[in-house]
Image 1: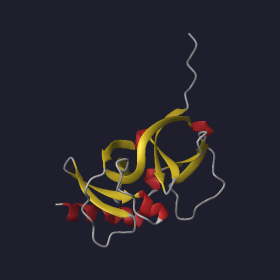
Image 2: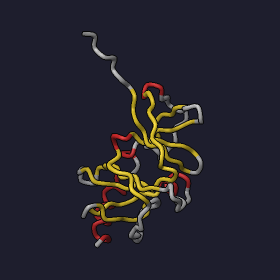
Image 3: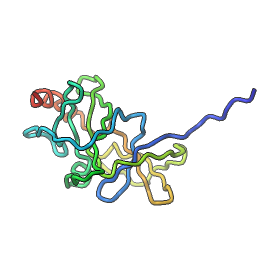
Image 4: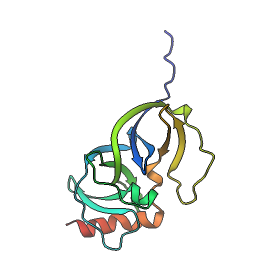
Length: 164
C-alpha cells in the first residue's frame, strides 16, 4: 500500500482590519460568536474592548481594528467575536475574544505557500507570513503573540474583577 502524501493544507478564518485581509488558523479558534455587548474595563490597555461571560468564565476581548489600525471595529452584522485560546499571565490557556470585521469566510491554503512579507512591524510580533489568494494578500495572524506579557498578566485579573 502506498502511503498518502503528507498534507500541508490548513483551514483559516478570514477577517478584515481597515480593508486589509488577515487569517487565523481554525485550529486556534474555539468558537465564532456574534458581536456581544461587552463590559468595559476601566483603565484597560489600548485595544482591550471589554469582557464577557463565556460559559461562566470571564473572557476578555481585544478589538483587532483598534489594536492594529487605531480605530474601533465597526458594528456590522459581519463583525464577530472570534474566541481563541491564549496563555494568561500564569501560563494557563484561557479564552480570549477577538473583535474582527468581516469574519464570515473560511478558506483552505497550502501552508507551504505562505511567505515572509519582507517587512517587519516593530511591536507587532503577531503578524505572520503572507499569501496571495488571487484576490489579494492575506496575512496570517498568530493570536498567541497578540498581547504583551504585561497586558497578558493583568488582563484576566481585571476581567474577573469587572465581570460579575
